[in-house]
Length: 287
Ligand code: PXG
Image (cartoon, rainbow, N blue to C red; front, side, top):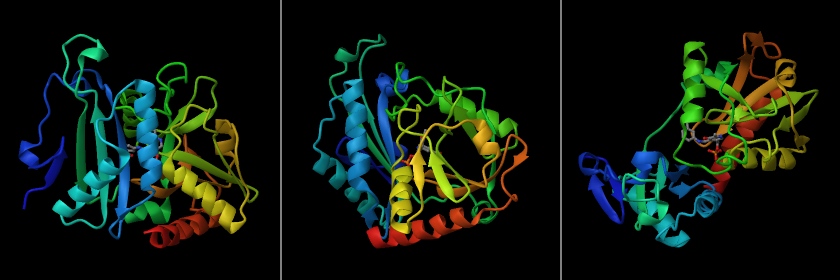
């Protein structure tokens, strides 16, 4: 059976899932998206993803043509049409068809696309042994440009950083902000651990406020682990005891090397493992 893709209220076969070349999402990256997970038939942190999508739309002045409830129902409908109870969901809203010019107000009908997929981003080895990352020369856009808190379709900055990681033989790229502080990775948020305490960059450090990041903050509170949202630099990453990344696709992945330096003893640390296992429990409990 061919994969069914949702486009503007219709479920179509993958081969027929097409949008107009005049769509500003295609012409300019003018749109927004979310990457969600469905575990055991329930979309994880659905409200947080939907709220973030609506916030992104507000800033970009895109009028989403359905209600939050309708959008949620459309995702469940797409999962059901494909018989998936565990899946990765890509939800996309573009500004819709317009002219070749930049005028956003000529785009009258924002388009909604939902793609569901079976997914595991990194191999099991990476979760057991950790990944290596490298600092990219491409920085996050400052918040007075398109704010990185907007999950827009324009991911070229992140893609450039990921290309740098590829050529450096690393799995992810560490991105700094315009102040030189650590922001996040190309598609994941970052946490470091030092002397039993966790740290992650604050939301004003030019990061996407990750849903998984926020779940980890909750888990730390539940487990009585101290975790602060505070600015830090690469020095803090180099000298950390442990480091890990978070994202809906990757969930939680240990980092054991950065810019050629070994983090801690070069193996996923105890706090990372504790949170990784708590995350698994959290997902099951929530699902
Ligand atoms: N930062 C950025 C820049 C992201 O794009 C995250 C953090 C994690 O956010 P959530 O809400 O998922 O915890 C993301 C996630 C990929 C990929 O291939 C990642 C994302 C989107 C598309 C692809 O790793 N976004």
